[in-house]
Image (cartoon, rainbow, N blue to C red):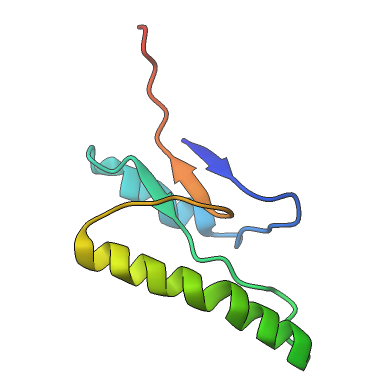
Length: 85
């Protein structure tokens, strides 16, 4: 398994423990976590979080409803397979 993060991204401490069991299902090739702005204590950072999270969440809900997949930005986990033994 590999993970993709932006340089300023941070994963929750239990992220790998939560994601790893999902890969026990052979058809699962990737998992996308929701990204959030961490310092949501001012109006500016709360609005940044809404701007960042809302469109992403709407797209993920639509993908779930249509059984489609897209991995983008922070929080991607993908299955690694070797082409040669």
